Each structure stands twice: as C-alpha cells, then as structure tokens.
Amino acid sequence: MKKDSSELVVVAGEASGDALGAEVLDELRIACFGLGGPRLVRAGMNAVADVMPAAAMGVPAVVAAAPRLASAVLALSSAVRRRRPSAALLVGFSEVNARLARWLKGRGTRVLWYAPPQVWAWRPRRAERIAAECDALAVLLPFEAECWVRAGAAVEYVGHPAGLHAAAPGAPRRELVLLPGSRAHEVRAHLGPMLGAAEHLSRAGYVSRLVVAEALDPRTASWASERARRAGVRVTGTGPGALAFAAAAVVASGTATLECAAAGVPPVIVYRTDRVTFALARRLVRVEHVGLPNLVLGRRAFPELLQGEVTAARVARSLCDVLATHAAHRAGCDEVRAALAAPLDARRPAERVAALLRPWLA
Image (cartoon, rainbow, N blue to C red; front, side, top):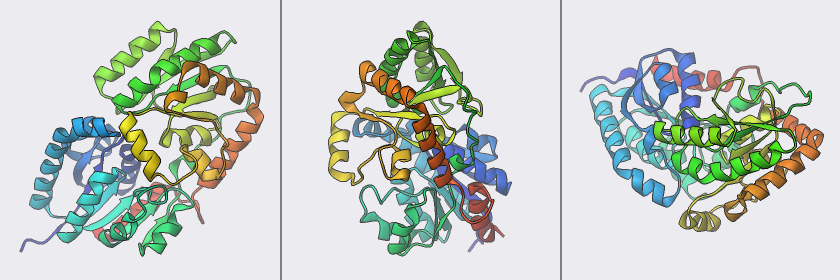
C-alpha cells in the first residue's frame, strides 16, 4: 500500500474560515490542497474546486447551492484518494466538514477541526460523535472547551484572532460602517435597511461606508456597491483600516460582530433569513443571544435585531442609542477584547493551531 504523504488537506467554505485557515497556512508554510477561498489560495493552498460561491445559510440557499457543493466535494475526495494526505485542517463549514471528518479519519488521515460546530448553541447531541471522529479540536471562544471536554474530545482553547486587534483611538468619530454579510442572500436581505438607517444618521452629520466582503460573488458585490453609491454611501473592501474611523457599525450576525467589538467599534447586530430557516432555528437554538459579543459577555451588551425588526427605522434607532451611550458601549468592547485574548501565553491562535498540526506532518 502506498504510504500516506506528509501533505495537508484544508477545507473551509465560508469567509471567516477562509481567513482563519489562511493564517494557519502562513505559519506552516507547507504544500497543501483542498477547498477554500481567495485568502487560502494566496497562503499557498492548491484549490481543487471553487467552493466559496456554494457557501450558504438557510434552507432555500442550501438547496440552491447543493449541486455546486456536491461537485466540489467530489473533486476533493478524488484528490484525497490520489494524494493520501497525512493530516486534515477543517475550518468551520459544519455540515460539510462533519461528513468529511468521518471519511478522512476512516482513511487514516488525522483530523483537526478548527472552529468546530457550536454545539453549545444548537444540536448538542452531535458533540460525542464529532469528538470521536476528530483527533483534536481547536476552539475560539473561552466557554466552548468545557462542553467538548464533556463529550470526550481532545480540545484546546486557542483564543480568537479578534482578540489581537488593537482598539481604535477613542477620539470623536463621525463614520458608520455597514457590514451586511459575506453571502449573497445576507447582503440582499440586509443592505436596504442598512442604507435607510445610514440616510437617517446622515442628517445628524454621520457619514457611512459599506464594506464589501472579499468572498462575496462579483455580481452581488457590484449590485451592492452600485446601490450604496446611489445612496451616497462610500464603498471599500475589507482590510486592517476598515474600522479605523468608525463610531459604530451595523453588522450581520457572525464573526464580523466580534471583530467590530474587539476593535472598539460597538456593533448593532442584525439578521434576516427566510421564514422556514428562522422557524427551525427558533426550535433548535438554545442560547439567549444571537450576537457573538453578547454570548461572550453573557449579557445583551449590544443591540440585536432579528427578522421583522430589521427595518431602516429600527436600525437607525439602535444606532442612535449606541451613539448616545458611546462610552458605555466602548467599555463593553474592551470587555470583549479582553475575553478573546489568547490564553496562557503570547502565541497567536494561528500559531497554536499550527503547533497542533506539525507533529502529524513530520
């Protein structure tokens, strides 16, 4: 039998996972292949298929994306059979990676899942099965490790990259940042109310800026950019300076909410999806808050608006409330950043994950 190679296979299907995985590859600097987005490719991953346009949330979006996703997974499985990697780095992408973890481990590939499913929030019965099908888990949030330990997993809390962000200076700022999401259906659901709120706040002297996610498909990015410009809103891409001058942000629920809070920019957290997905989520999700910063702090420190609450008027009102009590919300941001700081020593999360992988790649 052919001996397994010391190659690494990487699988990430969302913008946040693309960024997390790329940081790990920057540390490892080894040959690898897999599925992911532009940041992983720039970090050296040989992409066997383009999976990012197939990333979806919500029942209708998942159904529509299924054929493209299935094609990408078939291409990956063919590459794995051919190249026989010794280790796998799975990043987020819960439904796909849950199946890949089982298959990869069955083939003798050692599996590390970075940012595994949020079993503390929904479908907790998955935990023991996932623990048995992965060699190690690396979790981002300080309260996650305990539930995985109970499930029997080998788990390490590595900290969250957002905890490394330096807070922007506290001087008065008059800019609002709009972050509608990294998936097409998120952007189309959130952009209208965000632009309406921006128009309202412009009367108080605030300027607004739309940040277009790198992983967004070109058609949706063009549509969003044009609509924002017609509304008098500036448009930029993601980057280190995206939040530098922001007083507050309107953010689609997800990793970006943590990045805003850790950067000292209080977020108004919003999310709209289709009725079927929302009804299922209400039955399955067990946590009191949707926004990750609120979950980290264990209280409603930042506003959350869901479904029918996501209107221009409600978003504008929440922004006004945040701006009127800005010092208190900035203090909440400081708490989030402190909670996300990597534990025990000064190593960055990506360094910790790379250290877990290296013995499997020797």
